[in-house]
Image 1: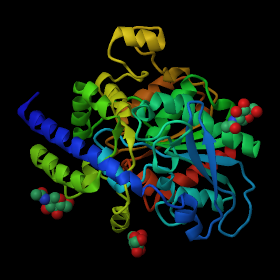
Image 2: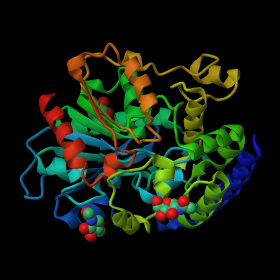
Image 3: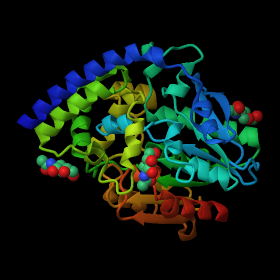
Image 4: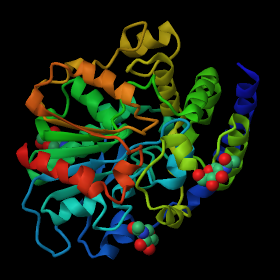
Length: 410
Ligand SMILES: *[C@@H]1O[C@H](CO)[C@@H](O)[C@H](O)[C@H]1NC(C)=O
Ligand SMILES: *[C@@H]1O[C@H](CO)[C@@H](O)[C@H](O)[C@H]1NC(C)=O
Ligand SMILES: *[C@@H]1O[C@H](CO)[C@@H](O)[C@H](O)[C@H]1NC(C)=O
């Protein structure tokens, strides 16, 4: 490691330790009325809270918006919106500035946010929340204070969370649905599709800022954090829950910016790329809200992808344990080329996105080269970065209108 990496690594360590200690203190704050009462009904929309239990016992919340603001009941198919999860280095910024739960889709005004726009257009809107996030923190036998509660990576989101949320909506509405994912909400969907899962319940999928291959990632702090996580995986696994905190985070970030000689007057840019179209005064409004936890195992899994460039299941780091879990010495790969060629996919990616890098998206498109041309819609937006897709004030015209046209065709 170079000198600068060493300085950075030690800062990261101190930072992460503080953060995790504080996380436990904050847990008591985890009570309120839920997303419907807090966000949706206040905008004049009907909203229902639902719960579904995964096969491995996590109790996930789902919100449903069954009608538009006018009160007219949905007459179009269900759409399940799936938020991202933070990515290793970007975790700081993503969790400081975004809600990485269903609130992602309700961030801007009803005229600008995808969930409201879909409801107003007559879609039956469902919002998913993955395990460990604020509104999906219950479990049939474990508590977030138990180490075993955090023993998962995104493999479990593919195997358990997605099937639970989708089959709940499918059973409840008796209809196939459309899927919209952002960031890691695209990785889990692509991984499931590559195993030919879930598609019996889906009409189509729209993937924004798609994440599959991660080895071209441009975000330098994210890369460094990934290296650190891999180097210390045993240590991190002992901490099991990972939740950043604003105060410590901003101090840490000042340090990281000085070490790397980055101009951090705009932190979101440093980690996610120069978002063109975000209303920065609105970001400040949300700064006071709490960050979302993830499991350290998940961060290590993502770090492995950044390091190896492979889309594989979690690597236990030794042959014996991999054989025990997978019956093979190395973790099995998710083969994106196995995604059925006739499944309708809409992929939108941005030229300024430092997490879903254009070159990584091109690798994914190489995997999808045999996909039927009329079943793969690509929308490249030169001036968009990672957050513009969910928070851009002009995303309706640029991204959401084309998505709705795609849904109407599929
Ligand atoms: C949906 O229905 C199927 C078939 O009845 C059942 O096996 C499955 O557990 C249900 N899923 C949920 C989440 O209720
Ligand atoms: C950092 O960026 C801000 C806004 O883009 C600019 O106003 C400021 O002068 C820059 N600072 C340095 C040291 O380059
Ligand atoms: C930005 O957000 C603020 C706070 O919600 C709002 O008052 C302002 O009109 C918004 N500006 C634009 C350009 O949308």
